Length: 509
Ligand code: F6P
Image (tube, rainbow, N blue to C red):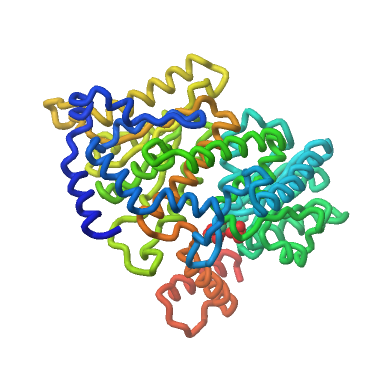
């Protein structure tokens, strides 16, 4: 964004009246800042955004070519410019007749769905263990928990960490003859995933029989999966135009299909498709994903708030913050523009959070009275989330009260009991935590993330920032092989040598 345009927006943001004042002076504020789309009621009225700033933000979205970028992405243009790839996760849930990619994806998904049906119908398969990390774990794991009430298939477990404790605890109490594994990896080379997959293969083989009958793969590298020994009929494919963190609607959703069934999975895709249609068709000022992106952009870039707390008032959405951490931070945590020029503003906020009301008894003290301002995104559902309607009213009353308290504060004379107020928050209410509305929510977040990237002019679709640590982990592990006696000078050489010495002591060598 041009420095002049940015400083104009920053100036407008600095002169925004308090949230309470804006409510006093403009009675229509709640309506102006509320959006309803595809079962989601989004209330942004308690954000630090005045009507004047909002109008300027709409102009910015127009100047930054957001409408054109949305159209180009849906069309399959090369949006991931640093890797020369299209960005077509929307084709995964589009009508098969709309493009070659959608046609191809619907066949790939059909194969996975038929297989999920078969897995669900075999009574001797009691557990499905997904082995994957990042986008090959967070989406399906979060969704399986979110749609817990639709689960009517085998027990589905997720193993992501190379820490042996993760696979150990997932396998506890399981029997190989009643267990199948899905190795989920776009590249089929991710070291943590391949290490865990190898251990799982040994665990199955040790019980005798053909391990390959019990292994599936969800991958964009079918040849690598084949070479690893996965049978052709057990490989579900997606393409490199689906980014890992945008892959929940691809065959990476296979474990979710096993848990909730292909029909409920399709419902989720329909919700995503509806949101795609909304985002593609609605003008900027009526577009929920654009509004959401503008709110996040305002907080991170114009007000300079370093973090955002995502607080679902829904226990079933407890993994949503972790999922959004990857979606937002891996996408927009960049330091250079699409042309490789240094970006001086904040790009991605730190995303964090835990479900309410638990968070109220942990970190909300800081949100209300701490010296850092943390915007909060509250998310819940109108329909009760469990079997106790009274509990649901208590939950929602708490959420609404927190949003109000953050905004209005309390001018108590006692400084210890004073609440500064004017702290921004949004409330997203789903009509129900159904597969369809949940799908719409996920697609809204996908689109908002991409739109934030376009506003910032960063490439939201690569992730070179994860490579350096991966490479160093390999050389560090190799250095363990020579007992830490490598002559190579590194900042961590003494630490590695100390660790190896302690290991020797523990094992009594
Ligand atoms: O951490 C980097 C990353 O490449 C993510 O983008 C991706 O979701 C994750 O690793 C897993 O990669 P893969 O699906 O190839 O195993």
